[in-house]
Image (cartoon, rainbow, N blue to C red; front, side):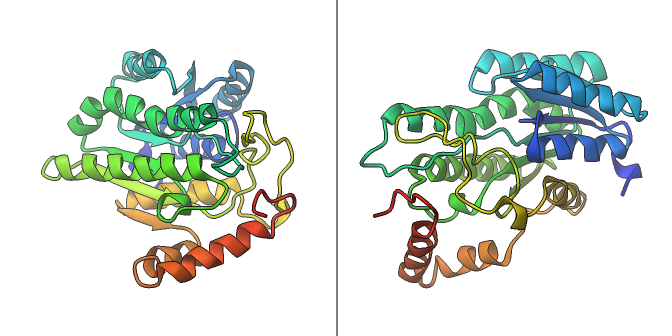
Length: 272
């Protein structure tokens, strides 16, 4: 499996921490040339230095994925430096926690800009190169993209939109050898819940869940690599996710109640 990625060019968005950082390090260990994208230059520089010190090859491009120009420049820098793009990991994302009746609509726009439009922009400018090498296009999603989660209207909407977009890209390029995968981790110990937006757009700062009992970013990163090797279509990393994807087509009312009760149990839940 390691030989499969030697000298492959991999772009990872949201690469300054969490799943993105772990994924960049995982590909670098396998000999890939990694292009890290995120907004924090200090964090990106530190990770690239770490990769290079271990004998890997990586660069970073400071990127706000909600900005189309940044995404175009990201793809151009990858091609300019390494000659192409073989894999795009659309990982950058933000979350929220508020009832729709109470949330400022600017919060939903922000989630759509990052989670959905960030995927669209990066895919637009990487796609010609991915098609040329019959590469892999990956969206790091959530069960929220398969079934709505209460208190996460913007998050679920953005992930549903991402799914529809990526599935259509897959079908449009069915005869061109493009691999498209949507991977849905379970709750993972990252910073996403600390930065989740509240109703007024401010950051939550505290996680409503026990981060110690969650999957690690490294675990998710290894599954991203495995999914690409096997050219998987959809990959759920938890039994809860697999069951939700199955039962929401059969007994959706039951799934609604399960997720309502689950989210209502969170400390300071917006569900009354």
